[in-house]
Length: 264
Image (cartoon, rainbow, N blue to C red):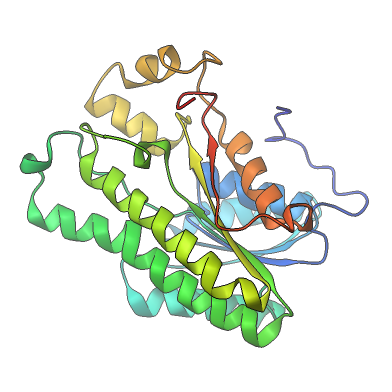
C-alpha cells in the first residue's frame, strides 16, 4: 500500500470531497494520520482529543497543506465532553457526514485478575462507553444535517480471538464490533453506514508504550504477521477513508481486518 503520511497533494476531487468528518483521538497516531488523509481527500475535518497542543499541531499542518481543519479538546471519558465535541463539528461546518471513532486507551498488559477495578472502569469508559455515546450523537447530527452518512469505529485484531495479554482491552473492542454491527442494521434504512476496522500491529504511541512495559512486543507482532512488518498509522487511515467514502457505498456492518495477514 502506498504510504501517504507525508504527502500534501490536495489537487482535484478527493475520495471524501465535500464531506465533513469528525475524528476522535486525532492528536496522534492513527487519528492524526486519518485527519491529514481525510483533509487531503477533500473533507473538512474536526479533530478531537484530550491534548490541545497535539491537536493544534495537526490542525496547523493540515491548514498549511491547503486543507480545512479545526479542533476541539475532548475527554472521551466525559459524557458532556463527547457530546460537545460532536456538536462543535456542526457548529463549525454546519453539518456532519462522516465520523471516525478512533480514540482509545490501552490496559496494563497482564492477566485479567491483575487489573485493578478502577482501571477496568476507566478503560471501559473510554473504549466502549465513549464509542456508544459518540455513535448516538453522530447519528443524531447526521440525521438532522445531512441526507445520510457513514461511521467507522476503530477496533483491533485483538478483539477477534483470545487475548490473554490484553484481555479487557480485547473484550471491549469485541463489544465495539457488536455495537458496529447492530448500528449498521438499525441505521441502514436511513442511509447511515456503520463499519469498523480491526488494525493489527501498528507503530503508534500506544504500541510503543506497550513495548516499554513488555519488551519484545513489536518483534512478536512482526514475526506473526505474514507481511513481516508492522503498519504505519497512515495505512490504517487509508482503510478508514475507503469505508467512509462513497466507493464503499454497499459496505455496512463489517469489521475489516487491516493486519498484514496476521489473522488469516
